[in-house]
Length: 432
Image (tube, rainbow, N blue to C red; front, side, top):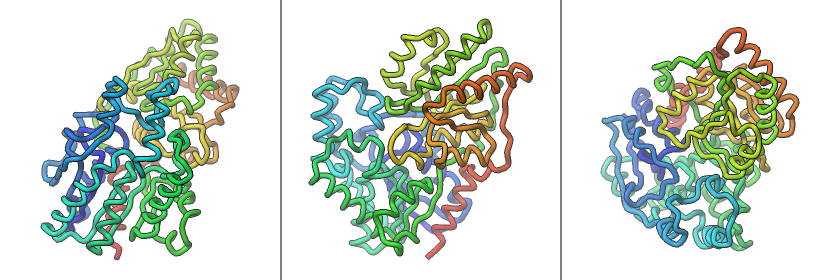
């Protein structure tokens, strides 16, 4: 089989959607004649916002995985701050920004470019050279964030003349929390230069949405734009083989993943509260599985919602799937930030795999809204559309009360299965 080296910082036991993207690709690539070889960071040296040891069981036994050391400034951060956790994506686990946190963000944004995990690069580059020679590898894939990983691929391309594919799961200098890193103009210029060099020098670039592709197109020439491909995240059919019965006696609204302070879910929360008050006596539960910012925990605590809200916290991926299956409807929130039309969270596709109706807030003309519509899987509303959110909730509630369950079964959903998307990736790897 054709051998491909995949360089990824996030790999089990790291948790999160970014890990699952390439874990699932690796699972199915051999079926399409491609042998993936993984290069990642040793967990003893890594700085993971989340860990999920259950994902280790999903790594195929036949896959070769190589680990290296790294130098991580986040370990110093934890000592100085006295915190057990490092900042999550979008700083979702931080409430009010303290003076210390502002200083740390400034240091991160100006002295660690492109990001604070660049200390892995020298170790990864050395090991990658060895693996390329040992296995006679001609194609290397680098996936980010952290975007510093892309610089490993760029160096390998320049030194060894290999075929280099850059997979960017998120925007780079357009990421929604970029301004919270307090970059100076010099730092922004350096970071933008890194970004453009990666986009122009990679042989192919993969992104997860059309909107992100269009964002990057503003930074490159028309000729470079032709090498872009969109392969979104997806869901794995095998994760949903063991179906869990929904609790038909409770109307359970669930959100899995992260709710940061910039998500602006107030109108949705108000709509849920109104539904709960009007349906007094019917058991309605609002359940969050994952990280919820202090801002929204405080908001809920100061309303009657506190009586019906459950915080489960972060759970292993398998349990997260079970919670989805136990629910009645699924809540999706996309950050209310500039250029959010291309944000396609991993949870959207697992929501599709759960075959439950989705209600969400976000850009109504964005990629997520388009996918939900084409799969007839629910509806996305503007952040301020409290009346429309309530009316849709009420409609779903009445459907549930009449039939006991709300399900979605559209053949279009299958096009977002991990196996189908891996077939697209394999086809791309076969191209010269």
